[in-house]
Length: 172
Image (cartoon, rainbow, N blue to C red; front, side, top):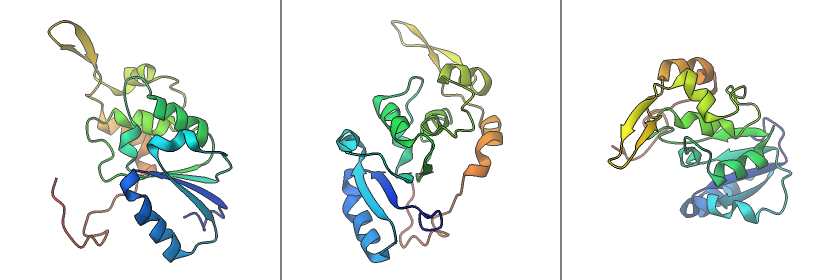
């Protein structure tokens, strides 16, 4: 994808344990672009921001809600209008509400008219009151999948393990 987009500099953010494997794949591929591979916890160590494309592996780890995490804010400052690829075996492990912050980090988000998660939630989440014993809090986990997909389905590519040529089947 980076080659097809004529990218010169790619930032690949992943979990620390995956860095060497991604570096090996990059070396084997020998593409026409340079790559910076870094883990999420080291984003603050980046010395420049002249990337054409940002790839976020295990992208579900950036999607806190209802308020954006520091990681979300750091990524938003890096990505802005750059090309962005989000990769995850399980994009929304806790709730479809996680899609908001995964896309919030891009200036090109289909939800960019919603400046906060709370404004977005009014249209896409069945907010429920949750009793925690000591307090009552809003629960934003019941997001409307069909409503969200109307906005983002065109952005998503999915593969089964078989289609992705997994040698070992993983059941979770």
